[in-house]
Image 1 (cartoon, rainbow, N blue to C red):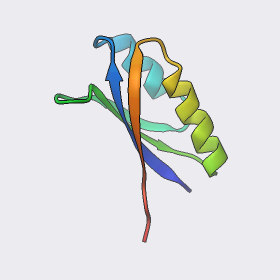
Image 2: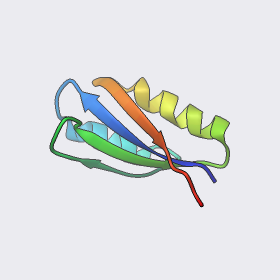
Image 3: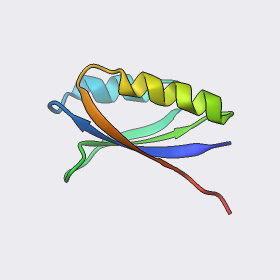
Image 4: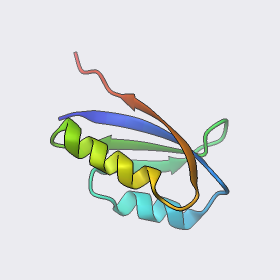
Length: 75
């Protein structure tokens, strides 16, 4: 199962965004963080296409300025 981490920059911190992220199918966790990025999200899906669909939903959320995606490599 492919997994990935997304780092999100947002317009402003919104606790509702965390709730929405956590409710999306494929999101394992979402946490607010301090630093250059505002939220870190871990996703997991059945296939790369499904993972891409989850990421597309996240990118379209109101308040998301930018994302950085890191696909996990399993050995």
